[in-house]
Amino acid sequence: MKLTSKQIKFLKSEAHHLKPIVLMGANGLTEGVIVEIESAVAFHELVKVKLVSSDKETKDLIIDAILRETHSEFVQVVGNILTLYKSSPEKKYNLPK
Image 1: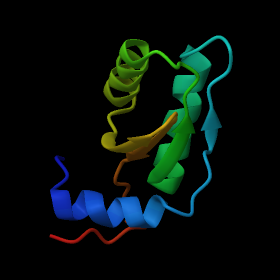
Image 2 (image 1 turned 180 degrees about the vertical axis):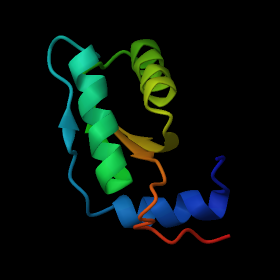
Image 3 (image 1 turned 60 degrees about the vertical axis):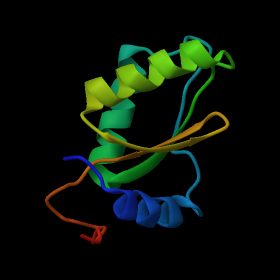
């Protein structure tokens, strides 16, 4: 599912008040972190993940790996906070068309 610009804008506004649910540790992106992100996004649909890397290239690689492994949609990155979305059967967020 590819998000439209209208849907991304809606999700950004919904995510504004959220706190990061998953915090990456000093070990970076591990199997355990991926599992936590998958379970969080499956339950909440919209989650924030606090990334560790300050290097832009490394951060981009980590984001690509998270999106690929969790099958989530990219919403935004602000500083070291990544916002992800993945639709679930419960449909907690009613996305605009």
